[in-house]
Image (cartoon, helix red, strand yellow):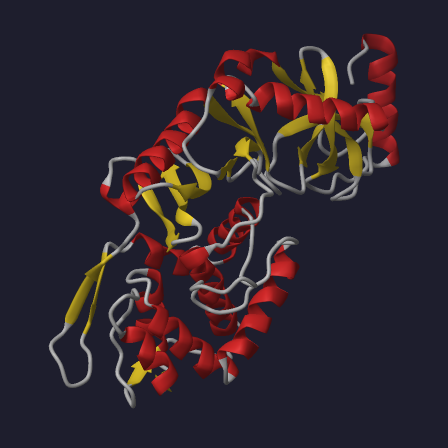
Length: 383
C-alpha cells in the first residue's frame, strides 16, 4: 500500500511536471489546476500567505448561493441599504453606487459584487443576510474551513484593507473549484461582461466586468480580480475549452498588464503542454466481463467516481489502463458487487487502482441449464 501511494505521487510528478522548472510567471505566488482531474500542474509559493483583496468576494457570493439553494434566501428578496454600506460608494472604492434607504434585490447585489466588484454591495448583502458584516465574516470563515481552506480567515465581505483577512492562492483555488462544482448555473454570473443597474432616483449605471481575460480569445468564463496596495494585483481565473477546465490563481502581479498577460500565459501553458484523459465516468458501464453459469454470458461493470488524469503530452503513451479480475465470474451476481480492479499503470508500474463493480444483477441458470452448460464446457471448452 505504501509503495502504491509513493508511486501515485511519482505518477503525478511525472505526468504533470513537464517543463515546470523552466517555466515561470511574474507573480509572487501562483497555482494552476486541471479542474476535472484535480491535479495541480504548476505552483509557485502556493501556500504563502496573501491578502486576497476582492477575490474575497467569491466567498461572499458562495454564502448567498448556499442560502438560496437551501431556500433561506431568494434572488427577488430586497435588502435595505444602510449608511455603512453607502459609505463605500464614495470615490476610491469599486462600487455599485447604492444609496442610503434604497431597497435592492439580492440578484442585483450579487451582480454588483461579481461583475462590478462593488464593496458597497458586499456590505449590503452581508448585513441583509447576517445582520452585520462581522457576523457574515464568521459565516465566511466557517464555510472556508468546510471546503478545506485551512490557511484562510475572512474578516470582511469585500476584501478591503484588513490584516486579518488572509488566505493563500491554493485556498483561493479550492474555493473557486467549489464554486464551479457546486453552483454551475450561478457561476454564469462571473462570465457576464457588464451589469446595468436601474438605480432608484437616478439614471441607470452600466459597469463592465473587471476580469481582463473575459475580453481575450482564451474562452475564460471567470472568476475575480483583486487589488490592494500592499498585495498589488491578483486574479483568480478559469477557462473552459473543449470539455476541459483550468483554474489559475495568482497574486503579487506588479501591474494590471502583468496580471492579464501572466495569467493568460499560465492558462495557455496548461492547455498547450497537457492533455486531460478520461479514464471512466461515474456509474456508467465501462466494460463487460465473462460470466459462468449465468442467464447472461457477460456482466457490465462500472466505477463509483469519475476518473480523470492530466498527462504531459510527451508522456501520454506511458499511461495504461487495465481490468483485473478472476473470471469467468460465477453467477449469481448482485448489482454493486466487487468484481475486480481497474488498474492504472505508468511505464509498467502500478500507481493507482479502483474497485470494479457490477452494474447489474445476473441471475443463475436453473439446474438443468447449468448441467448442459457444464457438459458443453467439459467436451468443448465452451463457457
